[in-house]
Image (tube, rainbow, N blue to C red):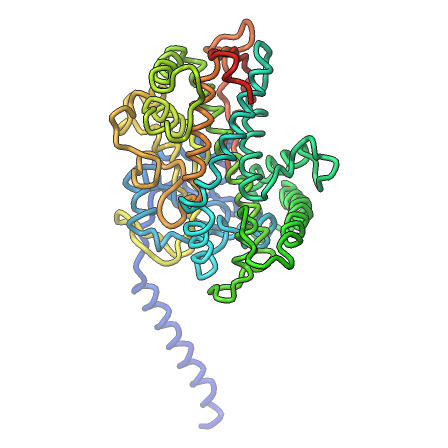
Amino acid sequence: MESYSFPLYLAALLATLAVLLISGHFRRRKLNLPPGPKPWPIIGNLDLIGSLPHRSIHNLSLKYGPIMQLKFGSFPVVVGSSVHTAKQFLKTHDLTFVGRPKTAAGKYTTYNYSDITWSPYGPYWRQARKMCLTELFSVKRLDSYEYIRVEETRALLSGLYSASGKSVILKDHLSNVSLNVISRMVLGKKYMDESESESQIVTPEEFKKMLDELFLLSGVLNIGDSIPWIGFLDLQGYVKRMKALSKKFDRFLEHVLDEHNGKREGVKDFVAKDMVDVLLQLADDPNLDVKLSRNGVKAFTQDLIAGGTESSAVTVEWALSELLKQPHIFEKAMEELDKVIGKERWVEEKDVPNLPYIEAIMKETMRMHPVAPMLVPRLSREDSVIDGYDIPAGTRVLVNVWTIGRDPTIWDAPEEFRPERFIGSEIDVKGQDFELLPFGSGRRMCPGYTLGLKVIQLTLANLLHGFKWKLPEKMTGEELNMEEIFGLSTPRKFPLEVVVEPRLPAHVYRV
């Protein structure tokens, strides 16, 4: 009998396992996933995504609805394309969708997810968010830097005045003022000042190229992020570029930290003058919940420079592009400015609340041309149900604010640039009105949005106040190309070329 005991035992074990597997299969509830196109093996739905992903996904949502499931390679992706779904993901279930997916950009360009944007949800990120809200972007600190914003805006206006009557590339001027404002606030000086370029670790031109590359690589659809098992091949060459860019930024940031530490060394009761000083003081704080490493300081610094530079320049350039197509909007803006400001001074930050039409132009620009048309991807941290659809843990979540900005059930004539739609409207851009989310909403909302608004509104108001604008000779507004390129931001494909003429007395332009 003993010779049969092992085979009988094995047969009984296998039978038991089979019963358990079968019963488990029937007990497992079939998931009710959101609708979407059928994915191909391996690539999923990547074949449906073109060079402008927000537009490709918009077209798909018109067919499959405001909540839609795609598959990017190995990963499920759920897209919200309506006010209701955006509110579900970003507010009602914010804590469920507060994670970030792992990407090559996060790994190679942010010191292995050590920055504010890409760091995973947890104690480190919560501490980073608290530092932003209470230290880096507090009302008191931003107000203390107002003189910098004023000085650099005046320098921009003076530079354009000197180029009166000539054709200029507006983006160059806008990028310079944004970069100078941010570098002085974050780094303490114009590290990219042409007059000091010989003593700098990178030239101004090199640094601008580094920033452009960072924004491009942070927003690309890298195949290795979707199909990890072929990631090592780096078929598009993006990872190689990310690694090279990381080395350039690290060299620059090491130089910045060494300079700041040199100034702090041996100084009792040192008073922080810029944001890097603040970060270094926080890194020295023994009471922090999570130690802020040197790499963490560099990652935050890079975030502050990049985030503050690109968004304002892109938004103002799009605003002027739209206005050049509709001269009557220019006239209305000038009427408001002349009435409120007069023609003997520039617009100041305290004037902005008294300029509702200028604010409406800004909001309408952000509706039609959001800097981040699909907010930075989120990651589902646990299984959830949204509008009756199952969203499993590990699902990547996109909110297409570009589609929301063109929803005909919300906006009358959504393809037309009409600032008047915001006159008397309570819709704002601060994350509480889901019809307009240029900075996102919820816990992962852009922490520096208040600074972005200050720079955008002050710059735009003064450009409209100080100059008459026209396109180069023989070009009409109808001929102005409005194509865009996709990255972490979405700028014009072809930089705006303009001719400006002063409209205020000459003495106002003197710096």
